[in-house]
Image 1 (cartoon, rainbow, N blue to C red):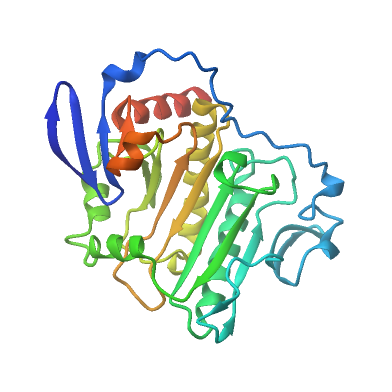
Image 2 (image 1 turned 90 degrees about the horizontal axis):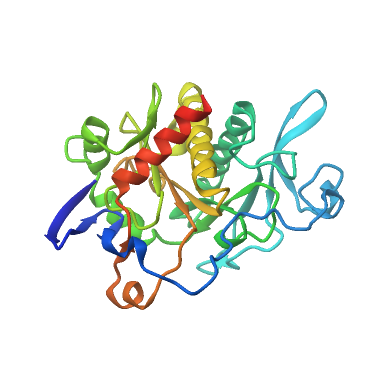
Length: 318
């Protein structure tokens, strides 16, 4: 998934599908007179009775598209967004912006949600992608989770979003070029030889990419070259739910519940030139002038060390 392009004074410059990063261990002890920034994922002061995503407040949301129930109570819901990001697709069709309410539990996180709840969430995400792709003028369906304030979430209740794009984003095109065929796919190669393993099960593995742009960045990769979330059979969705819960549990243990973004990276409609994967980006550091000018991430510890910490966290929790 990456290529070490240079090494000097104990530093490595690494480039890959995620971007470029420079690892400078000597900066790990750099002094600072500032107090630590509170990147912890605080759930906020919104009481469940004031949360529109909580049970009992269904009338406060827009049209419900789908729900999963158990014992007469909903476990997860799929609704239209009340505040869609884009007003139209080329001005010809209404925008499609959906929200997937991952659980009925307001204070849950993906690490504390059960395997069944995580599987329900993924099932609704897959259904959302399938339905949006049927609309005219949709070139891509972006799916993501903003978990915590520092990841851009406005509601603390766990939820994800699906948004129709009238074009294929540039970064998706770039990744597509790196995985057009299984033999040359960077993700297939990672499955065969990745050394930065965090966890794995029958169908997926979780790694810290060598070209990580964030501390404790995790990529979950399917062991088979399947292009999209909605192309996964039920058995693989259950397997994905398992490793996603394991990865977020390790991440929460190591980072003390830091905010993070999740990207569910699938192929454009009808395309197979892609390898489905999930990227998790913890928000525990801020970019400085070097990163903004150079367009390169600056890390103080290597992804190898970060993967080791995450593996140790998983071992201690078992």
